[in-house]
Image (cartoon, rainbow, N blue to C red; front, side, top):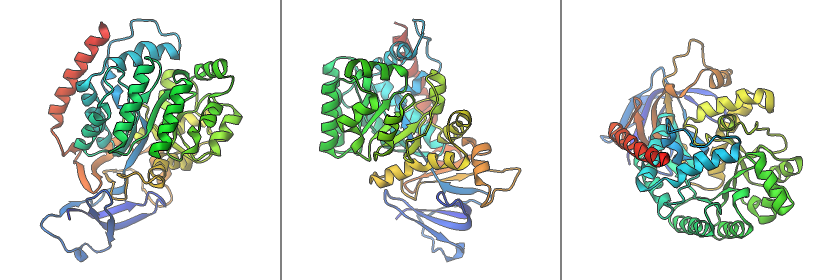
Length: 426
């Protein structure tokens, strides 16, 4: 068995936040364990063992992202929209839906590789992703999965099923989802209530029940979602999802949940579903502020395709929440780690205890058992991530990706980004 030995570590228990000076034996496997040894000399080494001296460094569990959009990875620096943007629906139509329609095999692969590398170098070893490529649906999820696997980042994928490009495309999305779920762990992706009719919603829930999976969708991110739902169905988005059975699964993920009333909060809060807040994305889109009142404890943190840095998103959730939410140091950290509960409670593989990060955090102040939260919010950044271990395997060493040539990948992603941007100019 391949093992990585972390020598002379200061281990931060991600649950208790107690600090322990120890040595850690990390086994390479989806179900691999970690073994703690007080004395390094008690470890019987084999020729295949990899030993990393972590003297002066901190080791803790790696991070996971509750809601991501890898397909947006090539948008950085892209051409501006050709139409004036006056509201959120127009931003979707003229920016994001224009981009996802332009994606093909190579740009999907480039986006996924860029995202997986960014995740790994930020200390993220698991990403829950929500994908859309209406003109390249068949096989798109496998392309993303293979790219993430190359880097060594575990994943829970879904395809964004929607009626916005026609019922035929919605059907293809359902087919892609069912095909992928036959051999992979994943979810049933839906865009949002306002682009999903009753027939498609019913088919998605039936597929959810058939595959014993969950729905992953955007919920009331903008007021328009509620407006359309009330005008079309005479109920709120939350009530519609409750009636359809979306809230019945503990695997269901509801992203955003900004514009929901007290009844919806109660329905969601009493359900086994999980909510994901995406504070920076909400700020960028000027759609409002997340408020956790009534939603219960099943709240995770996502990046929504803005970047792949869960630590940064957690800190943003805290800062934005000071005026808009009931959030303190402990709650911000708790939400950053809630995704681990989601994954383990639902028996998803790839986020075991042998997913670790080594932090080269030379703080001017002491980090101890009593003050971790202050360092988590005000001190730690992704630049402190030196080594990353995913499922027991070192995928980042001294801040360098180990499984592939990052320079080659960057050349590929830049070439594909230019191709994509040419399409957007047309």
